[in-house]
Length: 201
Image 1: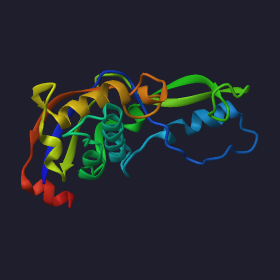
Image 2 (image 1 turned 180 degrees about the vertical axis):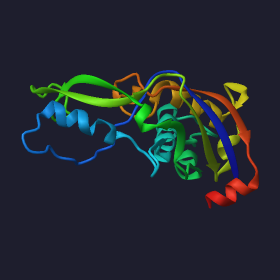
Image 3 (image 1 turned 60 degrees about the horizontal axis):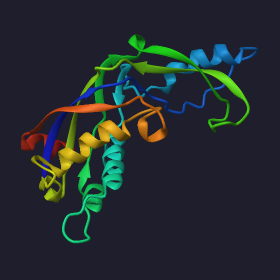
């Protein structure tokens, strides 16, 4: 097992849409209530600092591996090695407090389904591009660290992760959901000390 610390840089805005379940109060209008609830869409720790859920990067990686469907030997593929053999255990801090997050106002389908016929204004938080994060990927199955045949300077893991950043993304309105937010690029990959791996376990 190895832990690879990956430095990520956002190449487009990043937005979150965590469900909050809050309700309007009294005669509060829909718009006023939605604006009051907007930052409840964020994932925050107890101090209000925003983080990226670990499942965001894990799911993006798995989705990219499935999309690429790279062959290992013969008809065998790498997909299952990513799904079962790579993990992200900890929330990823963005280093931004929720009070410093901006909001955007959008005219969207009221029930979240396209072309529903009824649209309302909604507010969502977002972070401008060039956001950064350090993501510790725990490699349980080192098969994914083999060299990618299309570019021997990259491992299969790096190639799939870079593809995830370009075609899948993370968060609300990402490319995999017909959007263009949440794209990212990989700036650096380095193996970290055993203590971090032990902490994750």
